[in-house]
Image 1 (tube, helix red, strand yellow):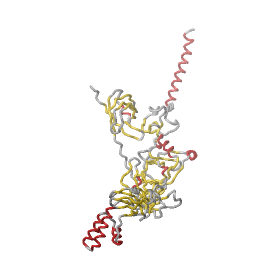
Image 2 (cartoon, rainbow, N blue to C red; image 1 turned 60 degrees about the vertical axis):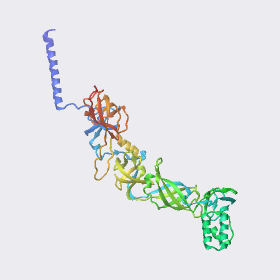
Image 3 (tube, helix red, strand yellow; image 1 turned 135 degrees about the horizontal axis):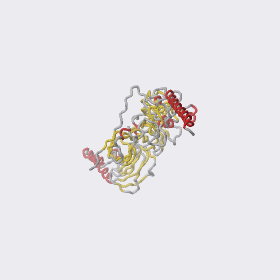
Image 4 (cartoon, one colour; image 1 turned 180 degrees about the vertical axis):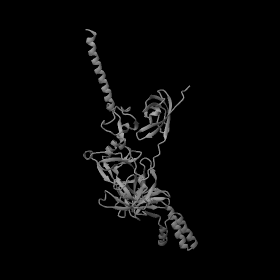
Length: 493
């Protein structure tokens, strides 16, 4: 083939190729190609600009670019401007609310009526006790049919006691009376008194003119015989206790009250008691004392209640349920106690807004009684809170990084927790976290160990590598410990 036969087709092909390239260049100048949506950046059709990206399991850590989470095998989630701030909320459709069993309650204002229900056991009144003792040495001539546990009336006989010393003193008194010497007679009467002879017995001897060496011991009060040590023929020593008798005109009821609720109780306040032995009846009494010592195990205080027992139907050992009316906290904001979420550091409620929106609100709690809790700060009357299903909503809010806020009229920024420091050796370094083998955090009471801590800022990891000795300062957050400061230490010589 000659040169002229192939030169013309080649020139035509080259011309077409150059024309196509030039057309593509002009086309790209007028209509540049659309960028490819980045993985993990959210909905490609969403025109909103994300503020940052985050891992829902570690919402405190923010990232400038989308991508894989360094903590979990999942994509980072974008955070948009209209999802942040004080209006951040969880939106739940009405049908889903019904499936979750979400129930709302209204914040009301009124008096918190407080009544404490406790159970105790009746006991003898330790102040109403009488002892029967021998006033002089002698012998028991007769013991009446009595036994411990018996009811006994005042003046009822217990035993007849022969006192030989008294017989001699009485005969001397009667002999001097016949002699008619007033001074000696007065001295003999005083001697009988000093021997322990009762005044009634001295008067009876003087009136009858006959010695009475046998004395009948009687019960000084109405009550129950608790102890009885009297047997016929037994010898007695002066001062020996023969019987112990407890009165039952009044009984005690001691109950344990939580120390947090004992502050509202007052000595002298009225008390209502109900006994299973007396169904349908209310026994009224008085709070007599709040004992000064607390139980360190149960964290309770003992409260003593006095119950009148004129008919003797209240028997020590019976159980009784007591209603203690406490001072009411008037004009308080009230929510159902079940609506409160207690995290250990603070208390939250899920506040229901319009259109199925829910957001966590931090509250300050007062006293609690009968399913109602007083709210000192954080809510307003008429607002609605979630009383059932709030834990599911709170979990969703935590996953989305929605933080609880207070509703105080003039909020003050909370003080940051203190920093806790320890020396450590770097095991692994990344822009988001440091894996360290650290010594003890003494101010936290945390022993040394090897673990990973998130960084407050990626800049903290600059210039660090595995094996470096550092001093780290961490701060406690709701999501765990967060490294706030890193100081590189000089290598040991």
